[in-house]
Amino acid sequence: MRQLNENADVVIIGGGVVGLGLAYRLSEKGMKNVVVLERGYIGSGASGRNPGGIRQQLSLGENIILARESVKIYARLSGELNFNIMFRQGGYLILAFTEREVEQFKKNVKLQNSLEVRSRTIRPKEAKEIVPMLATDKLLGATYCSTDGILYPYAVLWGYAQAAERMGAKILTFTDAKGIKVEGGEVKAVVTDKGEIKTPVVINAAGAHAAEVASMVGVELPNKPYRHEIAVIEPLKPFLDPMVLSLHHTLYVGQMMRGEVLAGVGNLDEPPSHELRASADFLPKLARAIIEVMPQFRHLAVMRQWVGIRDMTPDGKPILGEVEGVRGLIQANGFGGLGMMLSASAVKLLAELILTGKTPKMLEPFSLARFREEKLDKEMYIAGVH
Ligand SMILES: Cc1cc2nc3c(=O)[nH]c(=O)nc-3n(C[C@H](O)[C@H](O)[C@H](O)COP(=O)(O)OP(=O)(O)OC[C@H]3O[C@@H](n4cnc5c(N)ncnc54)[C@H](O)[C@@H]3O)c2cc1C
Image 1 (cartoon, helix red, strand yellow):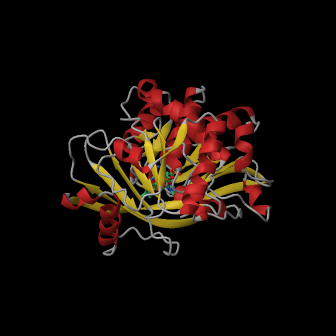
Image 2 (image 1 turned 90 degrees about the horizontal axis):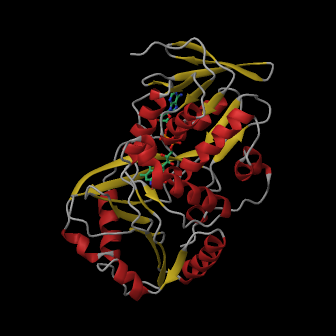
């Protein structure tokens, strides 16, 4: 058990990829007194429960830019952190099973290409050359980007945490943030279950609990927690280069560098909840979807299934930056199903904001204030394109 600091320059609530990434970036820029509060163990939230899919093939320009910059960061992060994050750029293959998807994917590729992401639309025949076990009878087309990939999420977390600690950051696990003290509209301290830490800046990187943390100071976030189930299939020799995604089946399948295959399906009808227990109907649903897309999977054994909670915003974009009315409170949450792929660049931009007091241009589209607008542009997996 580590001693609580009396004072800090910044207190980050949440020891996931966002909180730890930000602790690393602030420490790297020379900030000495950075404290991370994590109520469980490192990676006990969504960051330790996802397959590490990294894709730039998104539908909103601002998300594409964050993902594009994150890919550049991940490509050199192992060396930078001196920790192998097992990032493998085997591409991402996104399958189209409906005419609506075909049309949307054409638009996506055009936008992605205009933002220097080298994705392309391909025919079923070429998709099958990339993934030979693909069933193409119902497939109308696909998009592909060879620089997308997959990484090992825990390695990113441990890498960030160790590098931040080497530079003086303090990561306090099993320490719960219970309240935030604000006086005269400015953050003054964070109250934890182990005592109080005085600080002028608090970062809300609490993932699926971000709305609760914001409500400690009367700020209302539109974020909602949604369960998402995932399974690991027995490890095999490398056979699946890209991560395969079918929005139509809400299915993704990818093989890690260590051989294991991770696969999940979503349930769009499920109400918000923090329930972490696995459900009985997930595996049959996953099996049906995966066998329809890649029939040879019927021979493989599932090793384990689990649940993670996604911190979803109504438009599928994170909330990043200071909120009006509470000086020193910074939002770094709402990453939904895209937190591994968007956060590497987002935390760099947030560090710049914290250190200079100025909001970098790339962060502007992610302010909480956007929810005052009547019409929101939505990322395609939220918009229900399929
Ligand atoms: C099954 C699944 C599959 C996914 N697939 C992908 C994918 O392929 N690619 C991708 O990019 N993203 C994916 N995601 C999304 C990604 O995992 C998340 O967006 C990302 O991990 C969010 O990181 P975070 O740091 O914001 O939150 P978290 O990792 O949830 O971290 C928040 C932490 O805050 C802590 N906390 C909360 N409240 C408090 C408090 N009051 N005091 C102290 N600590 C507190 C929690 O314990 C938690 O550890 C997936 C998510 C799931 C669940």
